Structures are given as C-alpha cells and as structure tokens.
Image 1 (cartoon, helix red, strand yellow):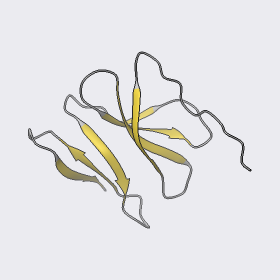
Image 2 (tube, helix red, strand yellow):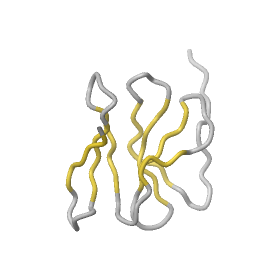
Image 3 (tube, helix red, strand yellow):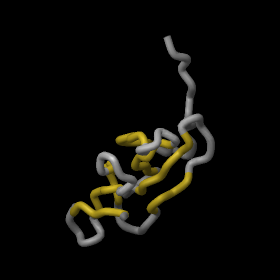
Image 4 (tube, helix red, strand yellow):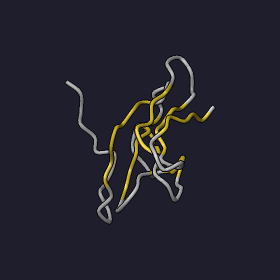
Length: 88
C-alpha cells in the first residue's frame, strides 16, 4: 500500500477544487478560492508552494488537460457567463 502525503495546507480559508494530474504527472492543477471567485493554480506532485496559472478578477474553474497534450482547458466567467477557454 502507498504512503499518504499531505500536499497542501489550508491557510486563510483557502479551498481547493477539481484536482487533475498534469500530462507528465509532475504536478496537480486545480481551482482555488479564499472568498469569492476562483483561480487556477498548480502544485508539484510531491508537495511545495502553490503557483497560480490564472489569477484574474473574474473566475476561472474546472481545469482539465486535453488527453495526450499539455493544452489546459477551463471554464471562465470573464464574459459574465461561464464559457470554456483554452491555454495552448
């Protein structure tokens, strides 16, 4: 059986949602929030500091990689409604 390792620590009320492995399994991407709105961040697979990929005034959420690529798709409410967007 594998060993459990805590990768994140909840600080300042931060919440984490929808974790996904990167294509090379080196990090996890997820959406995160402290109050209102969400942003997309990543953390190394073996733990470490949170790094924002997207940290905008509007909300970004539900990150997912296109299979076999490093293209990241996510939902954004930049236009006032949730639409799917890609980082290519």
